[in-house]
Structure formats: C-alpha cells, structure tokens
Amino acid sequence: MRKFKTPGTAALLAFEAAARHESFTHAARELFLTESAVSRQIATLETQLGVRLFVRAKQRVVLTRAGRLYGTQVRRTLEQLDRDTLSIMAHGSGGGSLELAVLPTFASEWLIPRMKDFDDRHPDVRVNMGVHTDLFTFDETHFEAAIHFGQPTWPGTSSDYLFGEEVVPVCKPSILKGPVRTAADLLTYPLLHSTTRPSAWAQWFAEQRVDDHRALQGVRYELHTMLIAGAAAGLGIALVPKFFVEGQLATLGLTIPFDVKSVAESAYYLVYPTELTHGQPLSVFREWLLDQAKAYRPTYRPDYRPA
Image (cartoon, rainbow, N blue to C red; front, side):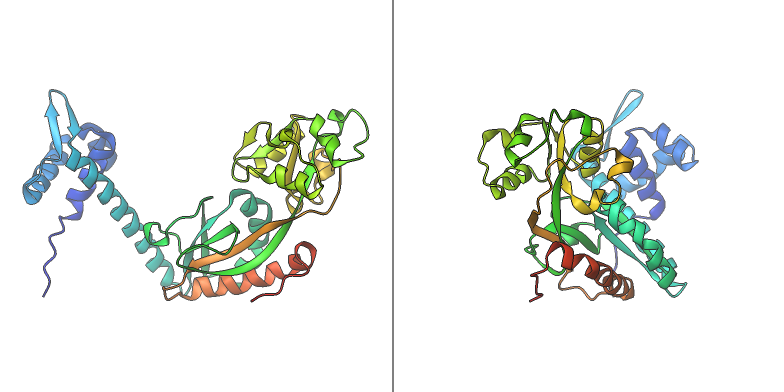
C-alpha cells in the first residue's frame, strides 16, 4: 500500500497564503486564524519537509528559493483540487462542466450570444470560459478544449473545423476625405493593427495587388474589440472579421470604406487533447457547436470540404 507524504491541507493552505503575501499577518487575516497559528502550521511543514521555506528577518518573512518554488507548485495543486471539487459537485446533478479556452472577441461577439440555446438544451452542463489567445499544452492547464484561430496544427490535439472568416476594413465615415475607389486609397489613412495578426493588413493589400511598406505601419491593439473601438473613435481604419460587425455598423457608427471579399487562409477550430477520454460535457458541447457553425460555412468558405 502506497503511503503519501503529502502535508495536511491546513498547513498547505497556511503556507500558500503566507507565500502569496510574504506575510504571516496577512495570511492569518485571510484565513481567519491567529498569526501564531499560521506560524505553527508553517513550522510544522518545514519540519516535515526538512527545508526552510521562509527566512525570518525582524518583523517580516521572505521566501527562500525553495519556498518560492514550492509555493508555485502548491498554489497550482490547490487550484486544480478546487476545480476538481467543483466539477465533481456538478456531476452530482447529472451534468458536469467543461473548461473552455476562448478567443475574447469571438466569445463575446459570436459564442456567448448563442449560449442560451445550449443552456436550454443542456441545463445540467456548465461551460466555463477563460481567455487564452496563444497555443498551449493542455496537460499544463485546466482547460479541456479550446477555440483556436489558425491552422489545425496544434500538437497533440484533434480539431474540428468550425468556419473561416471574411475580413473587412471599417472606419468612422467622418475621417474619410473623399471616395475610396481603390484599396491603395486606404494607405493615406492611419491603419489599426491586431497584435495577434500583425500581417493581416499586408496580406489583405497583397490580395488587392498592392505592395506598399505603409501596410505594416500603424498602432497595434491586442483585441478585436479594441480595434473596433479605435475605429469607432475615429483613430483610423481597422481590419476586422466581418461577422463581428455585421448588422451593427450603424449602431457602432462605422462604415466599410472599400468592400471587397477577402477570406482569410486561417479558420476557427475546436481543439481538444487527442489522447484523453472525453466526457459528456465536451461531447454535447462539440455536437452543438458544430451544428451552430454550419450556417457560417457557406458564407466564409463555400469550397471547404472536411477531410
């Protein structure tokens, strides 16, 4: 029979709080304990580990190198335990939960407005969303699936094609000095760029047979919502997915100064670890999401044929 050397939960909670604040006083206040109680828990933990976690200097404590490393590990473990506990509590109702990594603007403009339909169909399944814009390793995070924009080349995952996107330039009508007759005319205005898609404007101009270094110049924003807000504020012309602004141009006070069909090479995918056995939450969400995405495929990628 295996014997675990894991310290008690009370000691780990006291240490995590003290390590995060580097203060026994703040940890005691957070945990509704006395400072001496926190000190005793940590002293017991140090004895059990045979390692000094804090250096005590006058009226303050400072983490040792080992303490800092252990603090990160303990915090991650406690957070995972908390997620697992909440997940198993959800299973008690016959449903469950899915931890989904999302792209912020895609989630706010497309996914979340449709979630009421999912909730009505699957009231016992909770879909928790967190923002993650870069590729990551699933075994190093709590996420079980992700919405990804790019190519289906995420290592160690399976992917389902959702749909591609058409991109359009948008701006406030008042910044235009006259009719925009060619794509090159846009280069006379400030261009607003996405930091996650830094070459988007250059690719768009290349499709219009325009090669100009000005296509790479201009301020950069991390989120498409920021790009749209910048355009609405009259700061310049933003290149954004059409479905983010479609039907809202008048409300946002925006116009499309040069409307030409431009479909990005990349697309949206649902990705999830290949090697894991997936439960009901992911299965029902995947089925629902693929059904929702069908309506967008003819518009954005009519020639697409799943492999």
